[in-house]
Image (cartoon, rainbow, N blue to C red):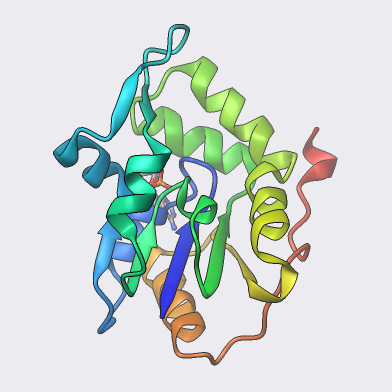
Length: 167
Ligand code: ADP
């Protein structure tokens, strides 16, 4: 069984997955990119590392795991959790984490436009996608919801969160 946890940067994937209690191996893809050198250089404009998706896909193979990353929905998975966060809160979280104002607002806009959710549904179908709104919830509360998805106790839910009015 592989469960992917994805979402716009700042939705709290790393923090929530660290609080999940599971028998599955936990994989933070960003750490794998760094430790294995799975990048194809730096993005010219932003200076951020560009992941080598082929190398990551090969490394993941068909291993069972709880895999966390904003790229996780680009790989095969049995269930895909998409963490969501109100764009204003997302921007605040990212700024607090030390990201630039530009990056924070770019991600807030992507969150309002459902970019990651749409990709997840396009790649996996809506019956495999589980949206969890993290706005005003603690990482522990979010972790319990992820555990429910892993346990098969939650119904799929895509399109239940709507931040489009924010735009
Ligand atoms: P991601 O892995 O999705 O980029 P992080 O887990 O790094 O997100 O969280 C981004 C920032 O938001 C961190 O500073 C973290 O402490 C904070 N954060 C994470 N989850 C929550 C939450 N549920 N409520 C408030 N702040 C959170």
